Length: 476
Image (cartoon, rainbow, N blue to C red; front, top):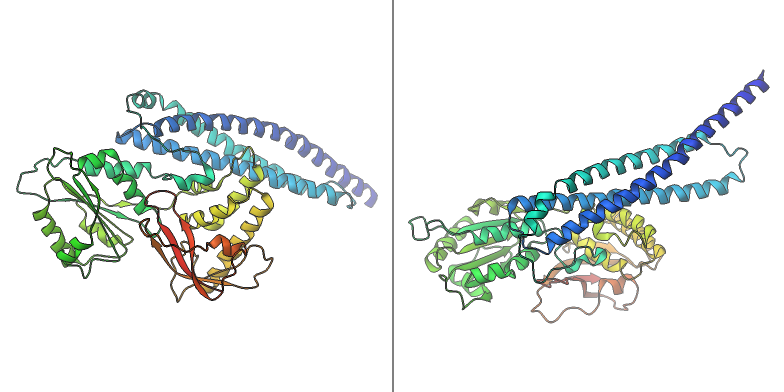
C-alpha cells in the first residue's frame, strides 16, 4: 500500500510539473510579444512628446494633455523596466536552481514552478494594461497633433531623453514653467483703475526641489524678458528684519530691457527659506505699489506653506517626482544595459525620490557603466540610508544638515566602513562666487583625497541655470 501511494504521489508530481511546464513555456512568448509592442508604443509616444517639446505650447488644455502623455511615457518605461527586472531575477534563479538540482534527489518542484508562473502572469497583466493605456493615449492625440502644428517652433530646445544626463535640462517641470509664464504675461484689466494691486504668485516646495531652477528658466524666457523692463532678485533666509531701504539695497538686477516701448513694468523675485513677517510684507508690498508701474508682478518662493496667504492667485506647489519619472532619471539605455536598468530600479527605490540624492548618486553611476560597480553603489546606498535612519531617526533625503544632525558616509572601495566621513552644514553658492572647494564627494568616496580633519567639499554643481554649487563641511 505504501509503495502504491508513493507511485501515485510521484505520478501526480510529474503530471503537475508537465502541465505547469506547458503553461509556463507558453507565457514567455506572449510576454515577449507584449514587450515588443510596448516598446513600439513608447517610441510613438516619445516622438509626439519630443515634437511638442520643440514647440511653444501655451494652451492650458494642450499642456495638461502633454503632461498626461509624459506621465504615461514614464509609467510605460517603468513597467517595461519592471518586466525586464523580473525576467533577470527569474533567469538568475532558474540558473541557480539548475545548479542545485544536479545535487538534489528530485528535479521536480511544483511549488517553485507555480511561483514562477504567478510572477509571469503578473508581468503579462501589467504589460497588457500598460499597452491598452498607451493605445488610448495615442488615439486621443489626433486633435492635439493638428493644434501642435500651429504652435511656433522653439529655436533652441534641450534633449528630452538623456537618461543619466538629465541634470543638464529642467526635468519634468515644463508644465509648471508655462503656468508661471502665463501668470507673468497676464494683462491688468484696469491698469489705471483704483484697484492697483500687484500680482503675487507664491511658489512653495521643500529644499532642493527645483524652485530656483524653475524661476531661472522662466526669467530666461524671451517672452518674459521682452515683457518686463527690469527683473530684480532678492535672496535671503527671511524678511523679518528687512526695511524698505535694506531690501532695495539687497536686490540684484538680473535683466534690464531698455528697448521696450511699454510702461516700466518690473518683475520682483523674492527667494526666502522660511516665513515672512506680516508687518514687514505689508510695508514692502505697499511701498512697491508706489514705486513701480501697474502690470508689475512679484514671485515669492519658500519652503513654508505660510507664504500662500500673500498670493493674489493660487500658490504653485512643487512636489517630488512620481516614482516612474524618478526611476526614468536613473535608467541607463535599457537595450544596451538591461542589467544596469534592473539595478537602477533598486537604487531609485532606496533614494525615495530625493532629487538631490539623485544628482549625487547619479554622478557616481555615470563614472562606470559597469554592473559590478553599480551593485556596489546600490549596496552602499542601502547601508547609508539604514545607518543614517538609525542615527538621525529620519531618512537623509536632501543632506540639509546641521552640526547636531550630521550624515555618515564612507568609502565605496571599502567592503566594510573603516573610517566615517561626517557631513554637515550644507549650503550653496551661486555662479558668481568663483571660489568653490576643489575636493568633491566623489574624491572622498573613491579614496582619491588624502585630506584629514575638517574641510569643505563640493557635493554637486548644477549644470543648468542658476548653476549653483552645493557645498558642505566634512570631518574625517
